[in-house]
Length: 336
Image (cartoon, rainbow, N blue to C red; front, side):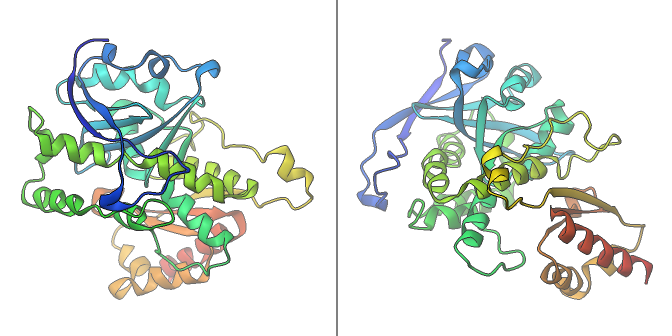
């Protein structure tokens, strides 16, 4: 393997261990700053059914979306973390990752994949596939445990890390980096990477594999299927194209063991509503009251492209009947 910039951070504990904040005693793993594909593991660059992987995954950039700039892609393996540098490595190093990011043999564990997927798709033509989104998993576990669904009750990554059921640690430096980003949006473009940048980028993926193991132990078979489907729909959400996603991998089918128990889950879909110019205000309403009332009426997730775009569309993800109900309400507001 070619030489690479390295530092060390604590390794996420074994799923059977308890994380205890400052009392936790983790062994260290290397962090590799990657500017050449040869610095990445062969089993990642050449996915195969014989060496299936589960990795933590995240992206950093400037205004990360279709029009922004992807600067770093973080990959967390059990024994090392790789920071793929899109600034110094350029398209060559990111495109070398394309087979893995699109592969069914490599599971990418990520927290809220929508904008990361959008950046990869529009900037590099990569269709992110086979993700486990911890934001979705958190919601499904809450639903499975009988807690009432609350609109826009999305767990932040900092909140997830703080939850004692999954990690139980504070992540104060995350807010420090957010302050720096507000002061200078180009923070992630500067080179060489500072120790703070390396540490912050690595911290965003270092516990994902540990959290993944904690979460999948809680999810039943039906929830695991819904997690896979919703992850695929999240990946597509802002990647709207002209062919109804025909070039994307198919959605995960209902497993035979779920179908055999006689209680078939409803198909889940991504629906896209075009909003005529000047009418998005009707959808959102004063202080968001209109969009909130729609979310409260339907068991579906509703996203708006907003300032990052696409600004003229509303995206609905959920079971078919609930998605169609949300569509009807939205169209009624647009026709009013």
